[in-house]
Image (cartoon, rainbow, N blue to C red; front, side, top):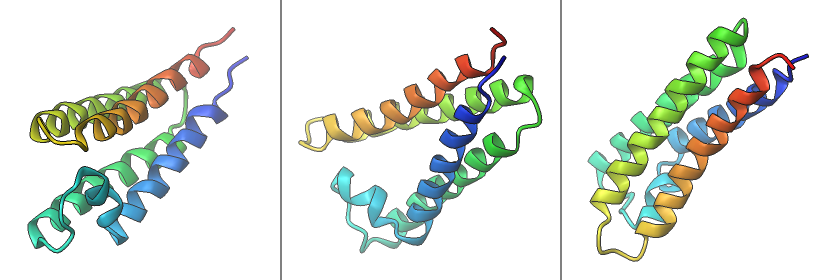
Length: 120
């Protein structure tokens, strides 16, 4: 028996967060210490938000375990990339640890849901 609902819930939460960031880029920019007054920063935050919304919805809609594992891998790799970029960009700043914890946490959470796609 699989517990396919667990990755779907993670996908729904990810999609909701992505849509929230798209609507209010400060949700992503503020914790990193970046100004939401900068149009370029807002655009970048919205791109990340839309990516998260799309991958979250793909996780919700994945038709089976194989597709779900592929989407989980994409989500986890996206969050890993975010962790590397944010960690590098915020080097020497007080927000770095928090930003790394959040991006890595999302990635680990998503990756952990892959276990729910395996028949027991």
